Amino acid sequence: MTHPLIPQILDLAGPVAENLGLEVVGAVFHTHQNPPVLRVDIRNPQQDTGLDDCERMSHALETTLDATNLIPDAYVLEISSPGIDRVLTSDREFISFKGFSVTITADEPFHGQKAWTGQLIRRDEEAVHLNQKGRAIAIPRQIIRAVQLSGSPRGGTA
Image (cartoon, rainbow, N blue to C red; front, side, top):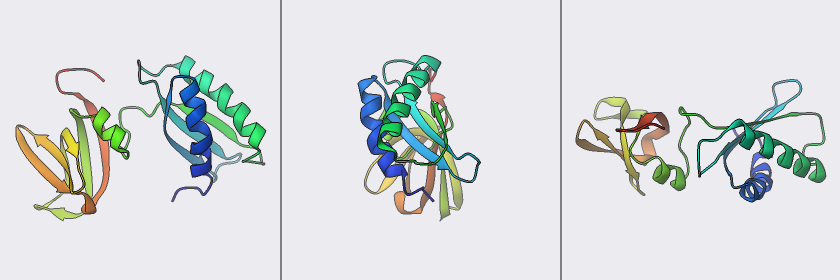
């Protein structure tokens, strides 16, 4: 379950990232740790996300969060890139990662399976479309639990 502050954190972090030429791709607030850890995942759309990007975002977001006092108690802020095994959620991510290898997991069987791996073709209103060894397959969105990156695009590197 998403922490109730995540939407507000994303609303603050988005413009901060944009001013730095970065994008926020997700956030998680681990409140079961002491002190709690707020992790914000970013990406640099122009090049591989590097340590410098994470440091710049960390300093800028820390200043913004401190000024708003959104999180009044002590916490640790972590800025990272999402990595290759991330879960795709937004339309933009499905467009950006077209051609990448993904693994789809479902809550119920479809054609006798609950998991599929293939090259991402697209996502539309009805289904997520994969290329499995030259064969197109459409998995209905209503049964999909997660679509997760599982490698680089065919013929290239991530």
